[in-house]
Amino acid sequence: MVYTGTIKKVIRHKEFGFISARDGREIFFHRRSLVDVEFDKLDEDQKVEFEVEKTYKGPNAFNIRLLKETQEAL
Image (tube, rainbow, N blue to C red; front, side, top):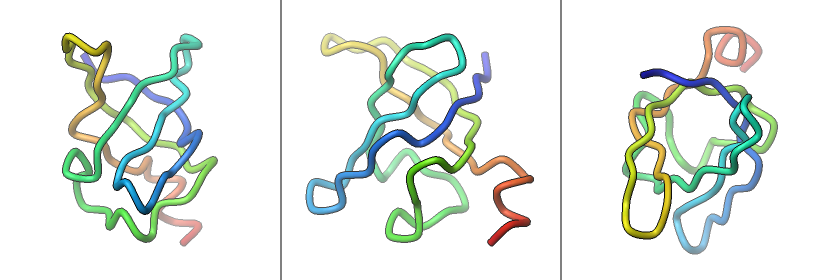
């Protein structure tokens, strides 16, 4: 299932961050989960779509893509 949300926080020196999903959840992501976007160019408040997998540490976002409206603004 594909979800949408907003980049909440990017922690560059640790190469991960968090997404605020539309359903209110905060979901962890790692830079290697990004598709067609460079981690260093990712900013807070950008809108994304993503999938979620359950891990022993909690939900983890993967296949993260910028939404088209965000890409056009760049």
